Length: 82
Length: 186
Image 1 (cartoon, each protein chain N blue to C red):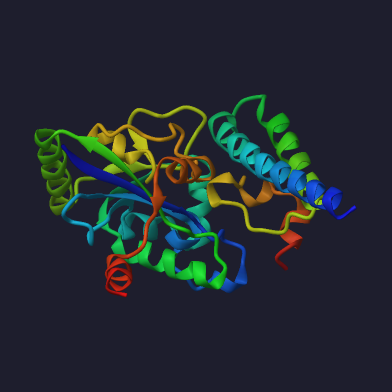
Image 2: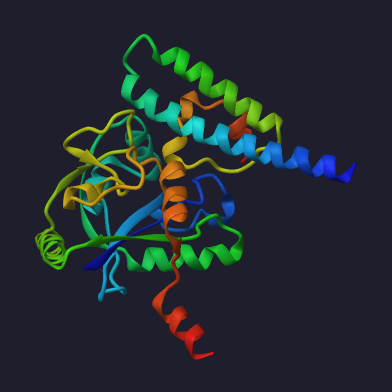
């Protein structure tokens, strides 16, 4: 049972790391396309991933260049630090 | 052949109260470079104080950068920032500093060092901006700036969450020179 728990924890950590990297890519994409029709969809995907990370236990401060401007960050993320 | 070292760390992030009084670059993360034989002088590219202050306070600067606006930047001696980042790991910060050597010919080494010193002493201005999806020819962040010297980057976008692990993968943990001296004398 303990081995299964450890394996789950390892997978969760790996998953969070990959999701965190995907936020970095989406933030860079949003910066490039913020004035295009694609921007709202990028924000939607970004927020979905970050909310999912928080559900999985993420409670760290993202790298600054991986964050969207504050007005596009989900409230759940802001609330982690207030 | 001689070595030029890329060196970098992920920042603490802006939102943790524990680190709120640290310099902005400690919280944002930073990449620099130094030359073999001059290990105690780490150069780094970032916005000038004057240009940053013209935009406003810290939150205004970060908001400006998050929206891909550029700020004039220059090369600085950022050695103390890297020392501080290393120190903060003792407090649980994710600011481990990694370095990766790049081997160049003696002639190339001299050219790159002379060019760096020229840009540093003349405070030559380049445009700084956060990473975008594709590199913009006339803009760099700290992590992509070494391309201006013709150095091969370990990761092309300059996003620190991708770049710093590449430094770790291809390099070793950096420790301040004094620490190395202490260890070698033990």
